[in-house]
Length: 356
Image (cartoon, rainbow, N blue to C red; front, side, top):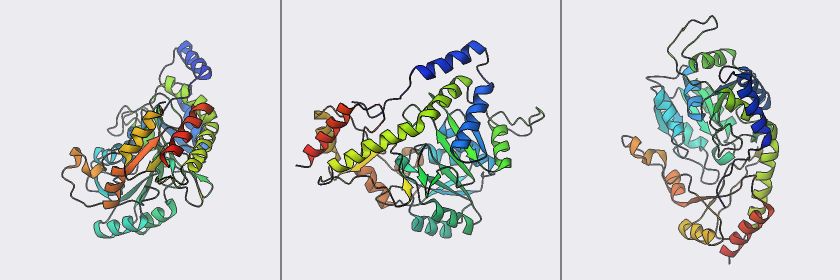
């Protein structure tokens, strides 16, 4: 069985057909409605749909005036888009090491880097759907008069101390890639409570267009099409059920590996993990992956290299041993809501057998 499977059905097809029939495939009502509905879900004032999660990060950083000469501290253990977005606005990414259990930024390491480097922004990732310690990271950002951006690309439906991720920082950014907790096919979203940040995002993704139609700044074409927004509106209505299914599957996997030589995911106190990935850790993940394959269970490594170890970051010289070791040991297994009862039984059986 595959590591991911988009849960798209007749309702999405119907909404897409409605948009096709309207003749308004871009710049129509679906995009505006989706942005508003997603903002409400995140308990913020504004939602600005974009073409993907990377452009959401790019637009958010630009709207917050992060650019050339600025320094942004972030995690080395994420999809490379997190760091690339910093470079896209001309700023400099610096990396702080991670917590070995949650794989999110370690606030003590962030504080040390911030004190040594001086920072203009903190870009925190809620990796695998597990909320980062956002209050501690906010305190560090405040101490340095820096902005805080949340990369929520994997954390739709996750909460921290009862509030949705994305609602804490100056801006939160989501991805709607097909493997995510909900999808629009391709797409992204910036959410914020700041009216000015929202307006600057809307301008930036539309070639710098202002409210009067004039082009006030240089921007990009990062606009989400209405076809994607139509899918997203249906998916959002299903998101809580999707996350509930992921959490139910994860609980069963937790039980299956209770006595196994495998480190299971953790859910810190006060956090509601969305389980975009069910990521375990094993001294010999190659053996675990091969064992799962024998039972017909797919798996994947997210991520086989820390960002600073990627060729594109050859100029970055830093030692981050916790992230580097995690990259050698993590393995993700299917947890998505399309798993059948038999699929879950098959996965739990395979995990249990590995423990014997």
